[in-house]
Length: 82
Image (cartoon, rainbow, N blue to C red; front, top):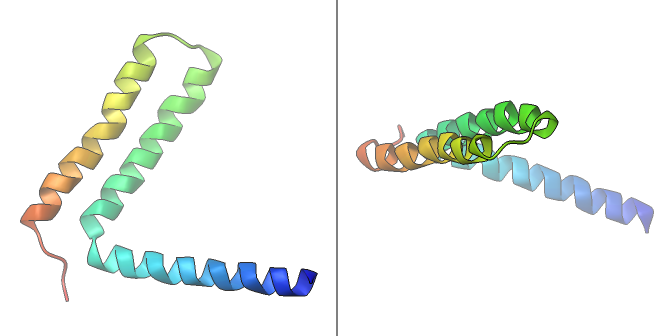
């Protein structure tokens, strides 16, 4: 049973990896916006854990949402290469 579960999880990981590659090829603007937001989350979340204040989460939310919103509007203007 352990071997079967391990095989299933490995297959699931490979499928997710393939889907991510296809998504990255079809939607490069969304991928860039998502990566930028992930870096912003890391840069805002880890220092905020040490010193929590009210303005930081609000500003952090704006910094994270802005690339996603700009990425969506930019995605409509460009088309991925074939």
